[in-house]
Length: 509
Image (cartoon, rainbow, N blue to C red; front, top):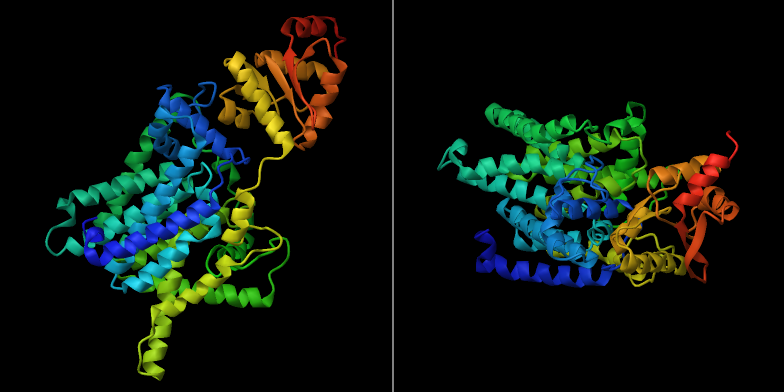
Protein backbone atom coordinates (compact mmCIF):
# COMPACT_ATOMS: atom_id res chain seq x y z
CA UNK A 1 0.00 0.00 0.00
CA UNK A 2 3.02 2.28 0.41
CA UNK A 3 3.33 2.56 -3.36
CA UNK A 4 -0.21 3.86 -3.54
CA UNK A 5 0.78 6.74 -1.26
CA UNK A 6 3.72 7.87 -3.36
CA UNK A 7 3.17 11.26 -4.93
CA UNK A 8 3.03 9.94 -8.50
CA UNK A 9 0.12 7.66 -7.58
CA UNK A 10 -1.62 9.77 -4.96
CA UNK A 11 -3.14 12.34 -7.33
CA UNK A 12 -4.46 9.60 -9.59
CA UNK A 13 -6.04 7.85 -6.62
CA UNK A 14 -7.63 11.09 -5.46
CA UNK A 15 -9.06 11.58 -8.95
CA UNK A 16 -10.52 8.05 -8.84
CA UNK A 17 -11.97 8.77 -5.42
CA UNK A 18 -13.66 11.88 -6.85
CA UNK A 19 -15.13 9.88 -9.75
CA UNK A 20 -16.33 7.26 -7.29
CA UNK A 21 -17.96 9.89 -5.09
CA UNK A 22 -19.79 11.40 -8.05
CA UNK A 23 -20.91 8.13 -9.69
CA UNK A 24 -21.82 6.40 -6.43
CA UNK A 25 -23.76 9.40 -5.16
CA UNK A 26 -25.49 9.88 -8.51
CA UNK A 27 -26.66 6.26 -8.70
CA UNK A 28 -27.11 5.66 -4.97
CA UNK A 29 -30.50 4.16 -4.16
CA UNK A 30 -31.28 4.56 -0.46
CA UNK A 31 -34.37 2.36 -0.74
CA UNK A 32 -34.35 -1.25 0.35
CA UNK A 33 -33.94 -3.40 -2.74
CA UNK A 34 -36.96 -5.63 -3.23
CA UNK A 35 -35.14 -8.72 -4.50
CA UNK A 36 -35.22 -10.42 -1.09
CA UNK A 37 -31.69 -11.84 -1.14
CA UNK A 38 -30.23 -8.68 0.39
CA UNK A 39 -32.71 -9.00 3.28
CA UNK A 40 -31.49 -12.52 4.03
CA UNK A 41 -27.91 -11.21 4.20
CA UNK A 42 -29.16 -8.55 6.62
CA UNK A 43 -30.87 -11.18 8.79
CA UNK A 44 -27.72 -13.33 8.84
CA UNK A 45 -25.57 -10.34 9.83
CA UNK A 46 -28.07 -9.42 12.55
CA UNK A 47 -27.82 -12.92 14.00
CA UNK A 48 -24.03 -12.73 14.01
CA UNK A 49 -24.14 -9.27 15.59
CA UNK A 50 -26.30 -10.64 18.41
CA UNK A 51 -23.88 -13.48 19.04
CA UNK A 52 -26.44 -16.05 17.92
CA UNK A 53 -24.26 -17.60 15.23
CA UNK A 54 -24.91 -17.82 11.53
CA UNK A 55 -28.69 -18.13 11.52
CA UNK A 56 -31.89 -16.75 10.02
CA UNK A 57 -34.31 -14.29 11.63
CA UNK A 58 -35.65 -17.04 13.90
CA UNK A 59 -32.20 -18.09 15.11
CA UNK A 60 -32.25 -21.27 13.02
CA UNK A 61 -28.81 -22.17 11.60
CA UNK A 62 -28.74 -21.77 7.84
CA UNK A 63 -26.64 -22.39 4.75
CA UNK A 64 -28.83 -20.36 2.43
CA UNK A 65 -25.91 -18.06 1.55
CA UNK A 66 -22.17 -18.24 2.26
CA UNK A 67 -21.30 -16.54 5.56
CA UNK A 68 -18.48 -14.27 4.35
CA UNK A 69 -20.46 -11.18 3.38
CA UNK A 70 -22.74 -11.25 6.47
CA UNK A 71 -19.56 -11.52 8.54
CA UNK A 72 -18.21 -8.37 6.87
CA UNK A 73 -21.53 -6.64 7.58
CA UNK A 74 -21.53 -7.64 11.25
CA UNK A 75 -19.32 -4.91 12.82
CA UNK A 76 -21.49 -2.20 11.32
CA UNK A 77 -24.65 -4.12 12.16
CA UNK A 78 -23.55 -4.16 15.82
CA UNK A 79 -23.75 -0.37 16.01
CA UNK A 80 -26.60 0.46 13.64
CA UNK A 81 -29.56 -1.14 11.88
CA UNK A 82 -29.24 1.34 9.01
CA UNK A 83 -29.55 -0.20 5.56
CA UNK A 84 -27.99 2.93 4.06
CA UNK A 85 -24.88 2.42 6.19
CA UNK A 86 -24.43 -1.10 4.80
CA UNK A 87 -24.75 0.26 1.27
CA UNK A 88 -22.10 2.88 1.98
CA UNK A 89 -19.86 0.09 3.26
CA UNK A 90 -20.32 -1.63 -0.08
CA UNK A 91 -19.26 1.58 -1.77
CA UNK A 92 -16.05 1.60 0.27
CA UNK A 93 -15.40 -1.99 -0.81
CA UNK A 94 -15.81 -0.89 -4.43
CA UNK A 95 -13.47 2.10 -4.06
CA UNK A 96 -10.82 0.03 -2.26
CA UNK A 97 -10.98 -2.64 -4.94
CA UNK A 98 -10.60 -0.05 -7.70
CA UNK A 99 -7.57 1.56 -6.04
CA UNK A 100 -5.98 -1.88 -5.75
CA UNK A 101 -6.78 -2.51 -9.41
CA UNK A 102 -5.11 0.78 -10.35
CA UNK A 103 -1.97 -0.22 -8.47
CA UNK A 104 -2.05 -3.67 -10.08
CA UNK A 105 -2.12 -2.23 -13.61
CA UNK A 106 0.69 0.23 -12.86
CA UNK A 107 2.84 -2.46 -11.25
CA UNK A 108 2.32 -4.59 -14.38
CA UNK A 109 4.26 -1.92 -16.30
CA UNK A 110 1.49 0.18 -17.82
CA UNK A 111 1.23 3.96 -17.79
CA UNK A 112 -0.88 5.63 -15.14
CA UNK A 113 -3.27 7.29 -17.61
CA UNK A 114 -4.20 3.85 -18.95
CA UNK A 115 -4.66 2.47 -15.43
CA UNK A 116 -6.72 5.52 -14.53
CA UNK A 117 -9.03 5.15 -17.54
CA UNK A 118 -9.57 1.45 -16.92
CA UNK A 119 -10.44 2.07 -13.28
CA UNK A 120 -12.64 5.05 -14.11
CA UNK A 121 -14.51 2.76 -16.51
CA UNK A 122 -15.09 0.34 -13.65
CA UNK A 123 -16.49 3.15 -11.52
CA UNK A 124 -19.16 3.99 -14.09
CA UNK A 125 -20.13 0.40 -14.90
CA UNK A 126 -23.91 0.38 -14.33
CA UNK A 127 -24.37 -3.22 -13.27
CA UNK A 128 -21.52 -3.07 -10.76
CA UNK A 129 -22.93 0.13 -9.29
CA UNK A 130 -26.37 -1.45 -9.25
CA UNK A 131 -25.26 -4.30 -7.00
CA UNK A 132 -22.99 -2.06 -4.94
CA UNK A 133 -25.97 0.04 -3.90
CA UNK A 134 -27.77 -3.06 -2.66
CA UNK A 135 -26.84 -5.10 0.41
CA UNK A 136 -25.30 -7.74 -1.86
CA UNK A 137 -21.91 -9.43 -1.89
CA UNK A 138 -20.59 -8.43 -5.33
CA UNK A 139 -18.60 -5.36 -4.22
CA UNK A 140 -16.95 -7.09 -1.25
CA UNK A 141 -16.12 -10.10 -3.43
CA UNK A 142 -14.50 -7.87 -6.05
CA UNK A 143 -12.52 -6.07 -3.35
CA UNK A 144 -11.26 -9.36 -1.89
CA UNK A 145 -10.22 -10.70 -5.30
CA UNK A 146 -8.52 -7.41 -6.20
CA UNK A 147 -6.55 -7.64 -2.96
CA UNK A 148 -5.61 -11.22 -3.82
CA UNK A 149 -4.18 -10.29 -7.22
CA UNK A 150 -2.46 -7.22 -5.75
CA UNK A 151 -0.83 -9.28 -3.01
CA UNK A 152 0.28 -11.94 -5.47
CA UNK A 153 1.87 -9.30 -7.66
CA UNK A 154 3.83 -7.93 -4.70
CA UNK A 155 4.95 -11.42 -3.74
CA UNK A 156 6.27 -12.07 -7.25
CA UNK A 157 8.16 -8.76 -7.21
CA UNK A 158 10.01 -9.75 -4.02
CA UNK A 159 10.64 -13.37 -4.96
CA UNK A 160 14.20 -12.68 -6.15
CA UNK A 161 15.09 -11.34 -2.72
CA UNK A 162 13.28 -13.87 -0.57
CA UNK A 163 11.68 -17.28 -0.89
CA UNK A 164 7.90 -17.22 -1.29
CA UNK A 165 7.60 -19.72 1.55
CA UNK A 166 9.23 -17.26 3.93
CA UNK A 167 6.89 -14.39 3.11
CA UNK A 168 3.96 -13.74 5.50
CA UNK A 169 2.15 -12.15 2.53
CA UNK A 170 1.97 -15.53 0.80
CA UNK A 171 0.09 -17.11 3.69
CA UNK A 172 -2.19 -14.10 3.84
CA UNK A 173 -2.79 -14.62 0.14
CA UNK A 174 -3.76 -18.26 0.75
CA UNK A 175 -6.11 -17.23 3.57
CA UNK A 176 -7.80 -14.63 1.35
CA UNK A 177 -8.17 -17.11 -1.50
CA UNK A 178 -9.99 -19.46 0.88
CA UNK A 179 -12.05 -16.61 2.38
CA UNK A 180 -13.19 -15.37 -1.04
CA UNK A 181 -15.20 -18.58 -1.38
CA UNK A 182 -17.05 -17.67 1.80
CA UNK A 183 -18.09 -14.34 0.29
CA UNK A 184 -19.43 -15.77 -2.98
CA UNK A 185 -19.50 -19.41 -3.97
CA UNK A 186 -18.51 -18.55 -7.53
CA UNK A 187 -15.20 -17.24 -6.13
CA UNK A 188 -14.09 -20.85 -6.44
CA UNK A 189 -13.00 -19.52 -9.84
CA UNK A 190 -10.24 -17.62 -7.99
CA UNK A 191 -9.08 -20.86 -6.41
CA UNK A 192 -9.11 -22.52 -9.83
CA UNK A 193 -7.31 -19.53 -11.31
CA UNK A 194 -4.35 -19.74 -8.95
CA UNK A 195 -4.29 -23.52 -8.72
CA UNK A 196 -4.21 -23.96 -12.51
CA UNK A 197 -2.14 -20.82 -13.00
CA UNK A 198 0.62 -22.12 -10.74
CA UNK A 199 0.48 -25.45 -12.57
CA UNK A 200 0.89 -23.65 -15.91
CA UNK A 201 3.93 -21.86 -14.43
CA UNK A 202 5.26 -25.18 -13.09
CA UNK A 203 4.96 -23.88 -9.52
CA UNK A 204 3.66 -27.21 -8.26
CA UNK A 205 4.31 -26.52 -4.59
CA UNK A 206 2.37 -23.26 -4.70
CA UNK A 207 -0.46 -24.96 -6.55
CA UNK A 208 -0.62 -27.63 -3.84
CA UNK A 209 -0.60 -24.88 -1.20
CA UNK A 210 -3.69 -23.27 -2.81
CA UNK A 211 -5.51 -26.61 -2.80
CA UNK A 212 -4.53 -27.22 0.83
CA UNK A 213 -5.58 -23.70 1.87
CA UNK A 214 -8.99 -24.17 0.32
CA UNK A 215 -9.44 -27.58 1.92
CA UNK A 216 -8.42 -26.28 5.35
CA UNK A 217 -10.50 -23.14 4.98
CA UNK A 218 -13.62 -24.97 3.83
CA UNK A 219 -13.38 -27.79 6.39
CA UNK A 220 -14.85 -25.82 9.35
CA UNK A 221 -17.90 -24.86 7.28
CA UNK A 222 -18.41 -28.45 6.14
CA UNK A 223 -18.02 -29.73 9.70
CA UNK A 224 -20.44 -27.17 11.09
CA UNK A 225 -23.07 -28.02 8.49
CA UNK A 226 -22.57 -31.74 8.96
CA UNK A 227 -22.94 -31.52 12.75
CA UNK A 228 -26.14 -29.49 12.36
CA UNK A 229 -27.53 -31.79 9.68
CA UNK A 230 -27.65 -29.01 7.07
CA UNK A 231 -27.08 -29.11 3.33
CA UNK A 232 -23.61 -27.93 2.35
CA UNK A 233 -24.77 -25.51 -0.36
CA UNK A 234 -28.03 -24.61 -2.06
CA UNK A 235 -26.11 -24.08 -5.29
CA UNK A 236 -25.39 -27.79 -5.72
CA UNK A 237 -29.02 -28.40 -6.64
CA UNK A 238 -28.75 -25.76 -9.37
CA UNK A 239 -25.99 -27.54 -11.29
CA UNK A 240 -27.13 -28.74 -14.70
CA UNK A 241 -24.71 -30.17 -17.26
CA UNK A 242 -27.27 -30.21 -20.08
CA UNK A 243 -27.20 -26.46 -20.79
CA UNK A 244 -23.49 -25.72 -20.53
CA UNK A 245 -23.07 -24.75 -24.18
CA UNK A 246 -26.12 -22.48 -24.35
CA UNK A 247 -25.25 -20.77 -21.07
CA UNK A 248 -21.63 -20.24 -22.12
CA UNK A 249 -22.85 -18.74 -25.39
CA UNK A 250 -25.19 -16.43 -23.48
CA UNK A 251 -22.38 -15.27 -21.18
CA UNK A 252 -19.86 -14.56 -23.92
CA UNK A 253 -22.14 -13.26 -26.69
CA UNK A 254 -24.72 -11.38 -24.61
CA UNK A 255 -23.81 -10.90 -20.93
CA UNK A 256 -20.18 -9.81 -21.40
CA UNK A 257 -20.89 -7.18 -24.07
CA UNK A 258 -23.72 -5.78 -21.95
CA UNK A 259 -21.59 -5.66 -18.80
CA UNK A 260 -18.39 -4.09 -20.13
CA UNK A 261 -17.78 -0.70 -21.72
CA UNK A 262 -19.16 0.15 -24.23
CA UNK A 263 -22.58 -0.73 -22.87
CA UNK A 264 -24.54 -2.77 -25.38
CA UNK A 265 -28.30 -3.22 -24.86
CA UNK A 266 -29.03 -6.93 -25.20
CA UNK A 267 -32.29 -8.77 -25.64
CA UNK A 268 -31.77 -12.11 -23.89
CA UNK A 269 -35.05 -13.46 -25.26
CA UNK A 270 -33.96 -13.12 -28.88
CA UNK A 271 -31.20 -15.02 -30.65
CA UNK A 272 -28.06 -12.86 -30.97
CA UNK A 273 -27.58 -11.36 -34.43
CA UNK A 274 -24.45 -11.64 -36.54
CA UNK A 275 -23.20 -8.18 -35.54
CA UNK A 276 -23.44 -9.03 -31.86
CA UNK A 277 -21.57 -12.28 -32.51
CA UNK A 278 -18.78 -10.40 -34.27
CA UNK A 279 -18.61 -7.77 -31.55
CA UNK A 280 -18.61 -10.38 -28.76
CA UNK A 281 -15.86 -12.48 -30.36
CA UNK A 282 -13.72 -9.39 -30.93
CA UNK A 283 -14.33 -8.30 -27.34
CA UNK A 284 -13.34 -11.73 -26.03
CA UNK A 285 -10.17 -11.73 -28.13
CA UNK A 286 -9.14 -8.29 -26.84
CA UNK A 287 -9.81 -9.28 -23.23
CA UNK A 288 -7.75 -12.45 -23.53
CA UNK A 289 -4.97 -10.46 -25.19
CA UNK A 290 -5.16 -8.03 -22.28
CA UNK A 291 -4.74 -10.86 -19.78
CA UNK A 292 -1.78 -12.15 -21.78
CA UNK A 293 0.01 -8.83 -21.31
CA UNK A 294 -0.41 -8.70 -17.53
CA UNK A 295 3.01 -10.19 -16.77
CA UNK A 296 3.11 -12.59 -13.80
CA UNK A 297 -0.67 -12.24 -13.46
CA UNK A 298 -1.20 -13.71 -16.92
CA UNK A 299 -2.05 -17.29 -16.01
CA UNK A 300 -3.99 -16.68 -12.78
CA UNK A 301 -6.12 -14.08 -14.56
CA UNK A 302 -6.68 -16.30 -17.59
CA UNK A 303 -7.77 -19.28 -15.53
CA UNK A 304 -9.85 -17.04 -13.27
CA UNK A 305 -11.69 -15.89 -16.39
CA UNK A 306 -12.16 -19.46 -17.61
CA UNK A 307 -13.25 -20.58 -14.16
CA UNK A 308 -15.79 -17.76 -13.88
CA UNK A 309 -17.40 -18.63 -17.22
CA UNK A 310 -17.23 -22.34 -16.45
CA UNK A 311 -18.80 -22.13 -12.99
CA UNK A 312 -21.66 -19.89 -14.12
CA UNK A 313 -22.31 -22.16 -17.10
CA UNK A 314 -23.09 -25.02 -14.72
CA UNK A 315 -26.06 -23.21 -13.12
CA UNK A 316 -29.52 -24.00 -14.43
CA UNK A 317 -30.99 -20.68 -13.26
CA UNK A 318 -31.27 -17.70 -15.65
CA UNK A 319 -28.44 -15.34 -14.71
CA UNK A 320 -27.91 -12.97 -17.64
CA UNK A 321 -25.19 -10.54 -16.50
CA UNK A 322 -25.74 -10.96 -12.74
CA UNK A 323 -23.09 -13.56 -11.90
CA UNK A 324 -20.44 -11.77 -13.97
CA UNK A 325 -20.71 -8.63 -11.86
CA UNK A 326 -17.88 -9.22 -9.39
CA UNK A 327 -15.54 -10.28 -12.24
CA UNK A 328 -16.48 -7.41 -14.57
CA UNK A 329 -13.74 -5.02 -13.28
CA UNK A 330 -11.03 -7.50 -14.27
CA UNK A 331 -12.56 -7.94 -17.72
CA UNK A 332 -12.73 -4.15 -18.11
CA UNK A 333 -9.08 -3.89 -17.05
CA UNK A 334 -8.12 -6.49 -19.66
CA UNK A 335 -10.18 -4.72 -22.32
CA UNK A 336 -8.31 -1.43 -21.82
CA UNK A 337 -4.93 -3.11 -21.63
CA UNK A 338 -5.62 -5.22 -24.72
CA UNK A 339 -6.95 -2.27 -26.73
CA UNK A 340 -4.01 -0.08 -25.80
CA UNK A 341 -1.48 -2.78 -26.71
CA UNK A 342 -3.14 -3.38 -30.09
CA UNK A 343 -3.42 0.34 -30.90
CA UNK A 344 0.10 1.04 -29.66
CA UNK A 345 1.49 -1.74 -31.85
CA UNK A 346 -0.42 -0.50 -34.88
CA UNK A 347 0.68 3.11 -34.36
CA UNK A 348 4.31 2.13 -33.90
CA UNK A 349 4.23 0.07 -37.06
CA UNK A 350 2.24 2.40 -39.31
CA UNK A 351 3.08 5.86 -37.97
CA UNK A 352 6.21 5.31 -35.87
CA UNK A 353 4.36 7.13 -33.11
CA UNK A 354 2.99 6.28 -29.70
CA UNK A 355 -0.73 5.78 -29.12
CA UNK A 356 -2.14 8.01 -26.40
CA UNK A 357 -4.21 6.09 -23.82
CA UNK A 358 -6.48 9.14 -23.50
CA UNK A 359 -8.07 8.30 -26.85
CA UNK A 360 -9.65 5.31 -25.10
CA UNK A 361 -11.73 7.80 -23.11
CA UNK A 362 -14.10 7.69 -26.10
CA UNK A 363 -15.34 4.41 -24.67
CA UNK A 364 -17.00 6.40 -21.88
CA UNK A 365 -19.45 8.18 -24.17
CA UNK A 366 -22.15 5.45 -24.14
CA UNK A 367 -22.11 5.50 -20.34
CA UNK A 368 -23.77 8.89 -20.16
CA UNK A 369 -26.62 8.24 -22.51
CA UNK A 370 -29.98 7.08 -21.18
CA UNK A 371 -31.86 4.08 -22.48
CA UNK A 372 -35.45 5.09 -23.20
CA UNK A 373 -36.61 1.70 -21.94
CA UNK A 374 -34.91 2.22 -18.58
CA UNK A 375 -33.05 -1.09 -18.64
CA UNK A 376 -30.14 0.04 -16.44
CA UNK A 377 -27.68 0.14 -19.36
CA UNK A 378 -26.27 3.48 -18.23
CA UNK A 379 -25.74 5.41 -15.03
CA UNK A 380 -28.42 7.81 -16.25
CA UNK A 381 -30.93 4.96 -16.12
CA UNK A 382 -29.76 4.04 -12.64
CA UNK A 383 -30.14 7.60 -11.41
CA UNK A 384 -33.70 7.72 -12.72
CA UNK A 385 -34.51 4.53 -10.80
CA UNK A 386 -32.70 5.66 -7.65
CA UNK A 387 -34.76 8.83 -7.26
CA UNK A 388 -38.06 7.01 -7.69
CA UNK A 389 -40.13 6.41 -4.56
CA UNK A 390 -41.67 3.13 -3.49
CA UNK A 391 -45.10 2.48 -5.02
CA UNK A 392 -48.00 3.10 -2.58
CA UNK A 393 -48.62 -0.60 -2.02
CA UNK A 394 -45.06 -1.08 -0.72
CA UNK A 395 -45.29 2.05 1.42
CA UNK A 396 -48.42 0.64 3.05
CA UNK A 397 -46.80 -2.77 3.49
CA UNK A 398 -43.78 -1.29 5.27
CA UNK A 399 -45.84 1.22 7.26
CA UNK A 400 -48.04 -1.51 8.79
CA UNK A 401 -44.94 -3.49 9.72
CA UNK A 402 -43.34 -0.50 11.45
CA UNK A 403 -46.59 0.32 13.26
CA UNK A 404 -46.85 -3.20 14.62
CA UNK A 405 -43.15 -3.23 15.60
CA UNK A 406 -43.68 -0.22 17.89
CA UNK A 407 -46.34 -2.15 19.82
CA UNK A 408 -45.28 -5.80 19.55
CA UNK A 409 -41.68 -6.29 18.42
CA UNK A 410 -41.82 -10.04 19.06
CA UNK A 411 -44.88 -10.71 16.91
CA UNK A 412 -44.61 -13.26 14.10
CA UNK A 413 -46.20 -11.98 10.89
CA UNK A 414 -47.38 -14.11 7.98
CA UNK A 415 -47.07 -12.38 4.61
CA UNK A 416 -45.90 -12.76 1.04
CA UNK A 417 -42.57 -11.00 1.71
CA UNK A 418 -41.52 -11.59 5.34
CA UNK A 419 -37.86 -10.90 4.60
CA UNK A 420 -38.71 -7.33 3.53
CA UNK A 421 -40.63 -6.75 6.75
CA UNK A 422 -37.72 -8.00 8.83
CA UNK A 423 -35.24 -5.69 7.13
CA UNK A 424 -37.46 -2.62 7.52
CA UNK A 425 -39.11 -3.19 10.91
CA UNK A 426 -37.29 -6.07 12.62
CA UNK A 427 -40.45 -8.19 12.68
CA UNK A 428 -39.92 -11.89 12.21
CA UNK A 429 -42.12 -13.38 9.55
CA UNK A 430 -43.14 -16.49 7.62
CA UNK A 431 -44.77 -17.27 4.29
CA UNK A 432 -48.28 -18.56 4.08
CA UNK A 433 -48.80 -22.04 2.68
CA UNK A 434 -49.74 -21.80 -0.97
CA UNK A 435 -52.80 -24.02 -0.98
CA UNK A 436 -56.52 -23.67 -1.67
CA UNK A 437 -57.23 -25.91 1.30
CA UNK A 438 -58.18 -23.53 4.12
CA UNK A 439 -57.60 -26.13 6.82
CA UNK A 440 -54.04 -26.78 5.67
CA UNK A 441 -53.25 -23.06 5.47
CA UNK A 442 -54.68 -22.30 8.91
CA UNK A 443 -52.98 -25.31 10.48
CA UNK A 444 -49.72 -24.20 8.92
CA UNK A 445 -50.10 -20.78 10.53
CA UNK A 446 -50.72 -22.41 13.89
CA UNK A 447 -47.65 -24.58 13.43
CA UNK A 448 -45.58 -21.50 12.66
CA UNK A 449 -47.01 -19.66 15.70
CA UNK A 450 -48.31 -16.77 13.59
CA UNK A 451 -49.65 -13.75 15.49
CA UNK A 452 -50.62 -11.47 12.61
CA UNK A 453 -51.31 -11.78 8.89
CA UNK A 454 -50.49 -8.95 6.50
CA UNK A 455 -52.67 -8.84 3.38
CA UNK A 456 -51.06 -6.63 0.74
CA UNK A 457 -51.48 -5.67 -2.89
CA UNK A 458 -47.86 -6.03 -3.99
CA UNK A 459 -48.94 -7.73 -7.19
CA UNK A 460 -48.12 -11.35 -6.36
CA UNK A 461 -50.72 -13.76 -7.74
CA UNK A 462 -50.44 -16.19 -4.85
CA UNK A 463 -51.86 -13.59 -2.43
CA UNK A 464 -55.04 -13.28 -4.46
CA UNK A 465 -55.30 -16.98 -5.20
CA UNK A 466 -54.58 -18.47 -1.78
CA UNK A 467 -54.43 -15.98 1.10
CA UNK A 468 -57.28 -13.54 0.38
CA UNK A 469 -59.97 -16.20 -0.23
CA UNK A 470 -59.06 -17.92 3.06
CA UNK A 471 -59.14 -14.63 4.98
CA UNK A 472 -62.49 -13.61 3.47
CA UNK A 473 -64.12 -16.91 4.42
CA UNK A 474 -62.86 -16.89 8.02
CA UNK A 475 -63.32 -13.39 9.40
CA UNK A 476 -63.76 -14.83 12.89
CA UNK A 477 -60.14 -16.05 12.71
CA UNK A 478 -58.61 -13.08 10.87
CA UNK A 479 -59.63 -9.86 12.64
CA UNK A 480 -58.66 -6.41 11.36
CA UNK A 481 -56.05 -4.77 13.57
CA UNK A 482 -54.85 -2.00 11.24
CA UNK A 483 -55.87 -0.82 7.80
CA UNK A 484 -54.34 1.58 5.29
CA UNK A 485 -56.16 2.70 2.12
CA UNK A 486 -54.97 3.48 -1.41
CA UNK A 487 -54.46 0.62 -1.95
CA UNK A 488 -56.22 -1.30 0.80
CA UNK A 489 -53.66 -3.07 2.96
CA UNK A 490 -54.67 -4.97 6.10
CA UNK A 491 -52.88 -6.14 9.20
CA UNK A 492 -55.04 -8.92 10.63
CA UNK A 493 -54.81 -10.44 14.08
CA UNK A 494 -54.67 -14.22 13.81
CA UNK A 495 -56.94 -15.61 16.54
CA UNK A 496 -55.26 -18.91 17.43
CA UNK A 497 -58.12 -19.99 19.71
CA UNK A 498 -60.73 -19.41 17.02
CA UNK A 499 -58.51 -21.15 14.46
CA UNK A 500 -58.12 -24.20 16.71
CA UNK A 501 -61.87 -24.38 17.31
CA UNK A 502 -62.63 -24.12 13.60
CA UNK A 503 -60.17 -26.89 12.77
CA UNK A 504 -61.77 -29.16 15.37
CA UNK A 505 -65.22 -28.62 13.89
CA UNK A 506 -64.33 -28.46 10.20
CA UNK A 507 -65.09 -31.54 8.09
CA UNK A 508 -62.05 -33.68 7.37
CA UNK A 509 -60.84 -33.52 3.83
